[in-house]
Amino acid sequence: MTTSIVHFYRHSPPPPPAVGAELTGCDAGMPVAPISLYALAPEIFDGVLNPDVLGILLTSKCSIACRHCCNESAPGHDSTRSYAEIEQLLDAARAIDTLKEIGISGGEPFMYVPLLRSVVRLAVRYGYTVSVTTNGFWARSPVAAARLMAMLRSDGLAALHISTSAFHREFLDACILPQAVRAAVDAGLRPTINVVASRGHGLAEVREALGPLADAVDYVVMPCLPAGRAEHSIDNTEFVQEQQSPHGDCREDFRKLALDQQGDLYPCCSPGGFTAPLRLGNIHAARPGEAPNGLLRLLSILHEVGPGYFLPFVRAAYPQDLALARFSDKCHLCHVLLSDDRYTAVVHWAGERLFRSLETGRDPPQDQPLDKGGHIATNTT
Ligand code: SF4
Ligand code: SF4
Image (cartoon, rainbow, N blue to C red; front, side, top):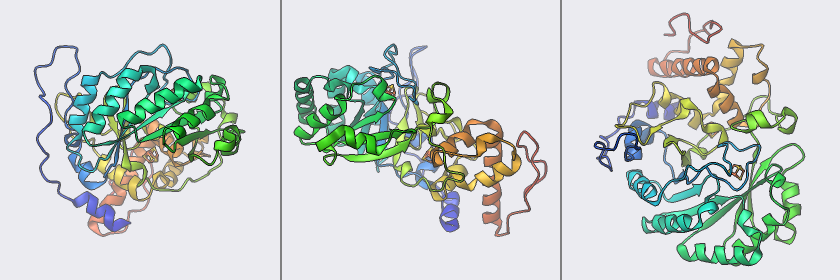
């Protein structure tokens, strides 16, 4: 573990490639044309990230407004990327040569079928595999759903992810999910069902809802996290939070970059990962900024060990905090640690402490007392 962390830290990146778009001359108030995604944080891409997938939020508009939505999407929202913007984004993504797939999500991409179809065709022309994530609302009519799936398949759609949970079910009839799956299967797809698990609703309930189609799909089960709208719309008793010290590294998660509606780029697509300390940069910045101090250290430790590395340090600094008692999974832990400035200060301190020790070859120093702001009172070397 430590060898590869040191490798990441000491690796000297090659010069960044030329940016993929003109950076000056934009109209006041208009977003600046996106800069190369690689140029946002070259040392991070060289050191820690080898993403296969770029997740693009096409729109913040959704057909429904689930209580758990991490993006807080809703029918009244109207922030949607244009075809031209997506084209610029794909140009900006070219410099990341490991990318193979564009994952389109939202909001609900099927709110804009003509745009969605154009974007699928465009991404295919760029040489990417294309997947779409949806809540399946378009499958109210089996006939219309079949027609839609056939069209998207002919456009080149390669994969469909259908999200479901107890919270989706507050808006969508039980027949929607199996009808969406049927249409996808008949069009030659094997859909993946993203099951957002909460107390009393998980994989077993979804399989039951699918009936004979339960084995025609793949499943990804993730716990509902108190992030985004869930933080204020879901009662604590509805979350499944049973892990005292979640384990697991982020290697696989870092294969999927996420680009949000504001143009902020993140190293993973987890609902828990849209926190300021994980932000790689903004593609509409006039010029690439330097990656924030400590980001490479933070991502290296998450990649190799996971957020569990930091928990003992934060608990030692804040032993009374109930927020540090139990978690749904590692992404919930990550969200808690990186959403509170006091905890984040301790996270950065612990990361710096580890790397100094690796660089000097000396054991880490005795734990330093932290004040209540998470500030380090004494030199850590
Ligand atoms: S969770 Fe998905 S389906 Fe629900 S409001 Fe958010 S984007 Fe829409
Ligand atoms: S632990 Fe954090 S960085 Fe890792 S996948 Fe989860 S949210 Fe992303």
